[in-house]
Image 1 (cartoon, rainbow, N blue to C red):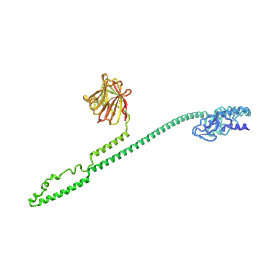
Image 2: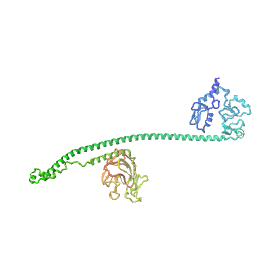
Image 3: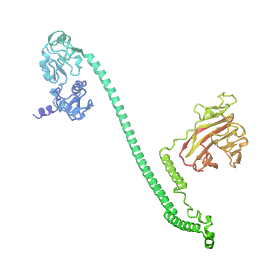
Image 4: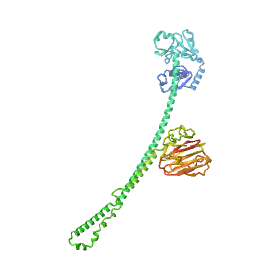
Length: 525
C-alpha cells in the first residue's frame, strides 16, 4: 500500500504515468517535461499560460526548471520495483488513452510485464515513448500520423483524412505545425527582446523624468526665492521713496510759508490804506510832515524772494525720481542675471569683417594668413588687412576665451568696439582708443597696447596659448598665459561704452579660438 501511495505521488497529472524528466512550475506543481511543454504550446495563441493543476496564470511562458530531487526519487522508485523497470520502454497505441491527450488514439505507456498481452495481439502497434508525435502511428489504420485535425483537436493519418469522421475537416500537416511553432518561438524571442528593450527605455525615460522633476523643483524654489527678493526690494524702495517725499514736505514747510505770506499780505494792505489816505489829503504840508513818507515811496523794500526761497512750485524733485529709477534698473538687472545667465562664450569669427588675406575655417574658429586674395565683397565692415572680429558681442557679465597662436611672425589678440576704424593707421587693434590687445612680434617680444600706448611685458613667454578675460561691470580686461600654473600678464581698467567683440590680427601662421565660458570667475594666477 505504501508503494502504491508513493507511486501515486510520482505520477504526472497530465499523462498519469511516472514522471519522465520532471520539471517544476513557479506555482510548485510538477509535470513531465514533454507533457507540460505540449500543454503550454497549446496556449501560445492565446498568449496566456496557466498551470493545468491549479490554473494559476502566467503573463509569460514559464521557464521549465528541471526538478533534480524528484528525478532522483523516481529513479530510486524504479530501481526498487525492478519488475516494472521497463515502464517507459514502449507505448501501445491500441490501449485506452488519457483524457488529457485527445490527439492520441488509444495510447498508453506500458512496462515489460504489462506489455506481454499487448505484444501478442497483431492489431496492437508498439512505439518508443520517446518518439516524436509526428512519428507515432494511427491505431485505426496503423499509419504514421501526418495531419492535425483542428476541428477534433486530434492527430490523424492520411486514411483518417480521406475517410471516416475526419473527412472534410480542416487539417494541417504536422511538419507544418512544427515549422509554425518554430517560427512562433522565433517571434516570441524577438518580442521578448523588444519588451526588454522597451522596458529599458521606459526605465531610462522614468529616470529622465525624475531628473526633470527634480530640476523643475529646484528652479521653482529659485524663482520663488527670487520673487520674494524682488518684492522685498520693491517694498524697501517704496518705503525709501515715501520717506523722501515726507522729508521734502517737512523741509518745504508749506504751512509756515502760507502763514508768513498771509502776515505779509496784511502788512501790505495796511500800508496801501495809509498811502491812499495820504494821497487823498489836500494839504501838502500834512503829507510832508508824515515820518514814513520816504519808506512808503520805496517799492523795492516790499519785494523780496527770501520768503519763497527753496520753493519750486510743488515738484518732488528730479533728483529723487532719478534715484528711484536707478534703483529700479538695478532690480531689473539682477532679475535678468538670475534668469538669463549666458551659456559658454562660443566665439565665432565674422566673415563679414574678415580681411581678404585671411582664410576663415569652416567652423569659424581659426584665422589663417594667406597671400592669395579671397575676393570677398568690399563692405564697410570689412578690414583691409590681417584682422577679423567675432560675430558675438558682450554687453555685460564676465567672460573669457582662449586662443592658440601657431607659426605667426606678428599677431595680436584682444577686444574692440564695433565702431573701430576700418581704414587708416589706427585700424589695427591696440592702435586706437576703441581696442585693447596682447601683441606678439619678432624676437619674442610681447606687449599690451591700448590707444597706441605700449607696455612692454617683463615676462618670458613660453606657451602658445593665452586667455582673454573681461568683466564688463567691473571695467576690467585681462590677459593670461595658459601655462601651469596659469599666469597673469596684464589688466586694463576702462569704462566700456560700447559692446565688446573679440578681435584677432595675424600675419603668417594662424590663430585658433579654443573655446571659452561666460558668467565665470576671473582666473587666479
